[in-house]
Image 1 (tube, rainbow, N blue to C red):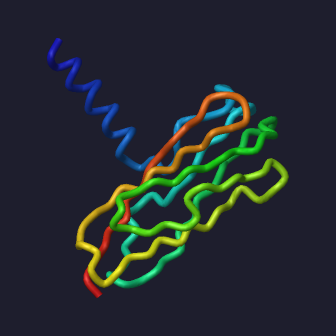
Image 2 (image 1 turned 45 degrees about the horizontal axis):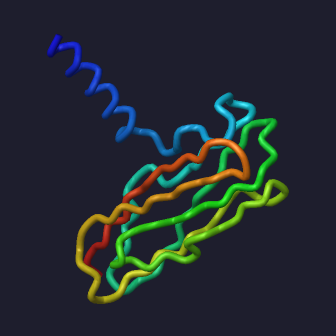
Length: 135
């Protein structure tokens, strides 16, 4: 029994933290009626005191025609703009986030969370890591 639980937990963790770069499906639960949020797969490195642009995108199902509100949250050590974005159904699904650090930002990894909420249906969320490195 312990072996079975260990195998299941390993598979779950590998799926969650492995190669995936998108969220679980939000909106409708079927592929055609929902959406996913796609973020960078690998750590995003930013030097202290610099600004970098990061792409976030919505993957819409064929029949998903709703606006989606994206909310971005992170540690107070990073500055992100914008933090609230309304991606209209008629607009491009790609969003550019500006992530800024100061010269005093502590070196290390910071988690950036992205939550997408459609007008109707289930919200979904995902996250990516920003690594602050020395200049």
